[in-house]
Length: 167
Image 1: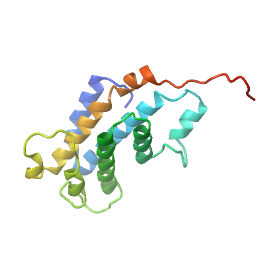
Image 2: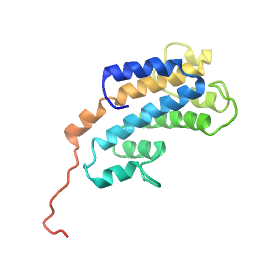
Image 3: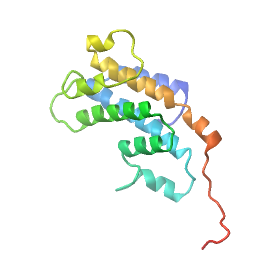
């Protein structure tokens, strides 16, 4: 996702909802992960170490889980948002690492979807529309963190310093 604008998000929603269950799980989670990565990158000092944190073998922030944990530890996302992102990650992992045919109704995917907390209309959980719960959660979480870098950067923008004593 190159641009952080409404048109990009609208396009994403369109193709996200048309995907197969496996495709929806993978790209929905990828969207949330990309927004967390963007949030972190917009805050970090712009130097060669920044890219190495996210890319390459054994990069410390190369996983969805590590991005969730760091964003949460820095206060960039709430407890509820961190739990939501982790459930989305678990759903993604089931689809990504299972060769068998899966749907949102399969266990443990359906159980993870029932644990999602994003605002849901009426009786959706009772209707057991697990895919809707997942799609709804991805959209609400993405919307919640979409412009967060602008607010975080007002208060926290790390920069390279010149130290009194340095090498």
